[in-house]
Image (cartoon, rainbow over all chains, first blue to last red; front, side):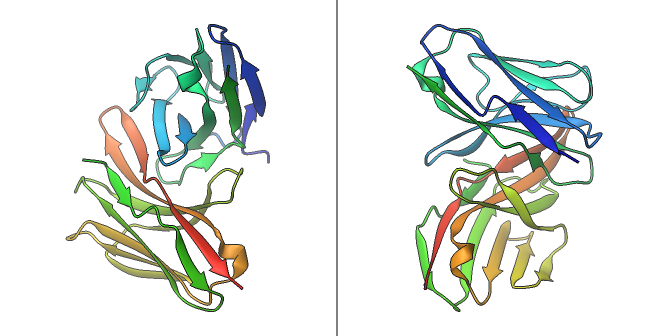
Length: 111
Length: 113
């Protein structure tokens, strides 16, 4: 049982480049989340998906887009990366009665 | 006002002592409360959750919830060096668009051998 799997683990982008962070869960959870974590800022919600086919903005959505491809997969896209998007990104999933389960994280650097 | 507030620390305690971590939340509609531990460079992992007022004990860990004061705490008894980590408080709330978790900024704990 892999839980929540994120790819890639590390990425370096140049300013203006685009990329997609992938996330998949095998726990049959309805809800999935994307967070970013910066020093002193804690985990901040970027986007979430309460169920397949729905997505909603979180606290810091600007500069990001998401796709809930199916129940298992929830991707995060940076269309034009900026240095301010240098961060550690975590995908998480949960069900109505469970805690949030986290992926291993993606460490992204934008130069 | 932030949804969840924690003292960022750092908090240092000697090995064997009790570590006390505190958290307050702003929305009285919050329904469930979680404590996560995060080691440096790793993802958060759940330690405990609590839904009802009062205390909940699991081994060396005790979570305390006071909904009237909007206050959650985590006590770690007989602290060990392996407890050195950042502890994140999270609250869960059901909104009309789905359930959401809100996290505090975390408290850094160091247990000194």
